[in-house]
Image (cartoon, rainbow, N blue to C red; front, side, top):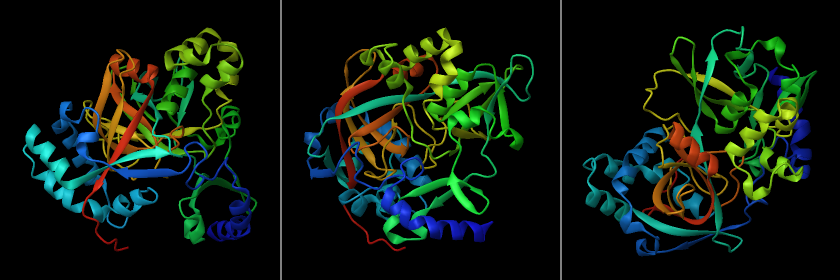
Length: 402
């Protein structure tokens, strides 16, 4: 198997570099969604609303990220962001200082962030304006075994799914990842959503849990984690395990293009309502998004804790965000200047880049994790707000030792 994979990659490396197969290879920065990123140093007095935020509330989220950073890892980022914050060693001093902060001490927290970090205004192709969306941890009904109303499988990671970091084979492909499957000594793109829903993986018996509604499974995949309440009342936590490497296509856009709703009406509640009202057409519409997420069961996570994000840290409601690591490093504090999706009030707060998302592309782009429950679902489902953002990078740049 391993020799076959090496031979396949040797044949594919050059064509992939030339053709850039977007269906299974993550594009290098800059991406067409966001363009080239520029960073401009600014003072904390330039962060809109900085003095009004309760920054002490962001310290636990920052510390969670510190605990998840591993020596020798690559946190991501490009240009100045990678040079100043792409290596976990560059965060060591600030992480040690944060551990000594008195819990809940607002003055101490503000002195900490102002003392250890330099804010940078972010722009993509010279434009500082970007898009901010939200996500949450849904709760759905399910069971351990199929039967009766529990007929929709929530799949675990397939045994034949292969993830490859092409940078390990060619330095100029660093940051590009390939997802595929072996077939007769050839490495092929992995099955898309339509093929998987059509039974392409049925022989592998991957059912982790069984749900009552295919739309519930689809929503869980979009959110990347969730809570499944069993008939006896126990809640099972599930989280992202792998993805099939196919590009994410928002079906809200598909429905708008088909004239089913206006683009400015697209929201998760509106999409859900349409799918529920059109069961005969729902699967075909969902299949327009070829991306498919596989899950794993989370053990030892309390009900009042968020699921782990891509960094490995547990997500903090309202303080954790998903970013595009082609531009910004995971673990970095990010200041958001946008508006609340429900009230329209200013939403200006310090958040932590702790997760990734298939639809999160570009330098001025973030997905806010709102938590779980009805309020989180309402905010996440309706959030599509314009705004600007700033990344806070360590003042002291330590030399990376890899």
